[in-house]
Length: 354
Image 1 (cartoon, rainbow, N blue to C red):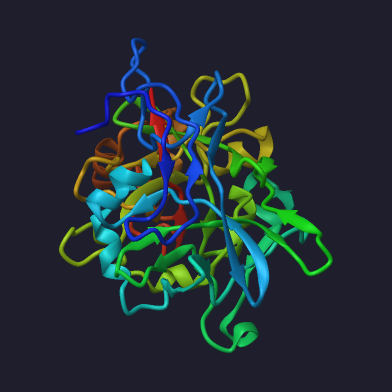
Image 2: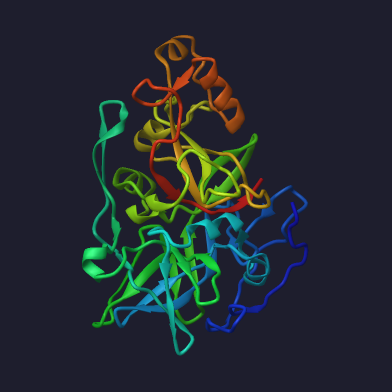
């Protein structure tokens, strides 16, 4: 995996000068002495990797101000210039409802659709945590009926054809009132930075830190504290990670792992609801792999009653091992059918890995 090695502070704009140049706050070198590696080199993390500070850009939608960041690009040179993840698979979004085609007005990106923030997130635990008794996301993307054209999606196609993962993190209305995504911890429009809460996950036994921006299912958006953006479901190819045809990558999320904040084996959505901690989802590829995409094709994983009875429902950290457990009859889909893609997406670009 090729990662930039130099610590740098630079002004960034798009390759064609499409965005206002801003000074980027760059974090530690990609590979530090303690093994911590930064994927998004335009980000700066706090000491415990719980908050990432990212470049903030101003855009417009319906004549109002939109604030967004960029986490991934479909073009290698553009990704390097921006200090973001490369995901060549994003090119497969072209021509689908999962991408907005944006225009430029005096060098500022104008989005056909944006997000309603500040709606009041609600998550009420079910009898075992998951599924929740009630779940309502705190932010919801505009629909095609509202805009008259397309629905909100964080993926945009620039006039030069490059696809960016450009999630909206705040809006400012005509009265000057700014509303932010729930996971925004700081928004500095003067310095063009946004602090966003990270989520901990697992990859091949290592700890990863990612940003949960959007989900295409309302319950998932509520649980992830992310924006509900159902248009992302139009991304090809459900259940496939093919670099030639798919814009998705695989992620496993346990529904009924062990719970208890102090339990070293805790994991899953029930734990996330009851313990208020990360579900410790397990991703397959990471940035640097040609199958990587921030469009995670969620595979809900449920331990079978037999696995639970044998106390085999331990914390997992490798996607391949989860697939093997499913093949051995220890894990199924929530309805008891074979483990497979569950039919919804979360937009969660990785920031770093330990």
